[in-house]
Length: 50
Image 1 (tube, rainbow, N blue to C red):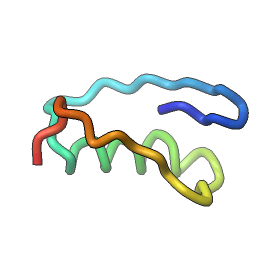
Image 2 (cartoon, helix red, strand yellow):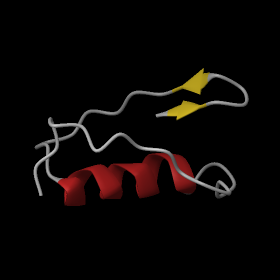
Image 3 (cartoon, helix red, strand yellow):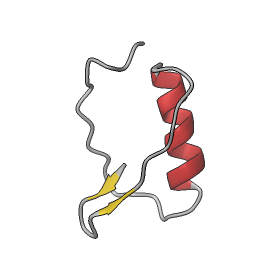
Image 4 (cartoon, rainbow, N blue to C red):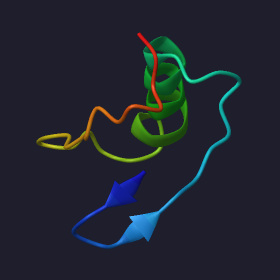
């Protein structure tokens, strides 16, 4: 996860590459600690499964 305004970068391991797991990690490790962003930019990379 990268905050483009401050360039803060954080990496969190995930058990699998599902979109549910990615959303859970984003909620628990980013949104619970920092203010909610105005928008979220994502690339829908091929490494994530639905």
